[in-house]
Image (tube, rainbow, N blue to C red; front, side, top):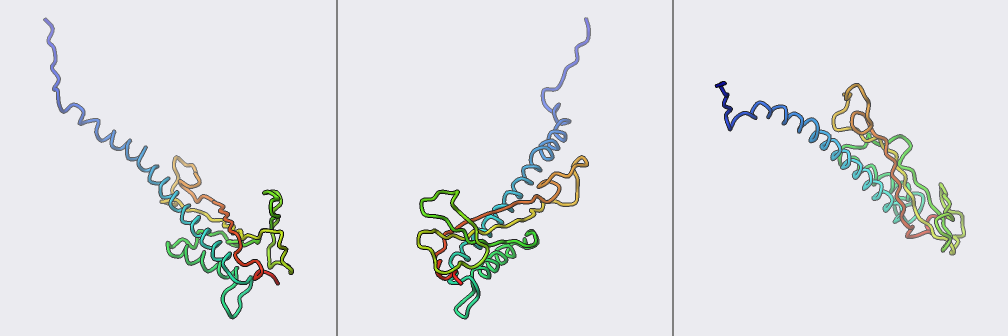
Length: 179
């Protein structure tokens, strides 16, 4: 009668645990960590853009006056302060944030909006709606920069990802934005 081998009931899978843990860590948890931190960084840029737009919309004038900062200064100071709080000021691409005053006909729909890049001409047209639009272009760095995965450069994973944010808020004092 042939000899049968007996296997132990417990302890045979211990050899597979290191490989399984490595696959779990490198294949699932590490990419999940990269995606989560990338998402948090995008939210930071979004909130900074939003706060800058609100600050510009609340400004009493377009230019700086003795009563307070103008719309452009308020927008720039708020955006810089918010990004500096998380040591992220270097993410913003040069020339941004950018401020425009949008003018739209009441009831005209989305297609009736036009952008103005400076103070409003006088007199203010009462049939138009005015709102501020702040645009930001930022390069979001990855969690660990300077390495390549299988020799590839993947934006957001191994190299910076360029993100554009826009935010619009209605102007609280359109008469103050006139020349």
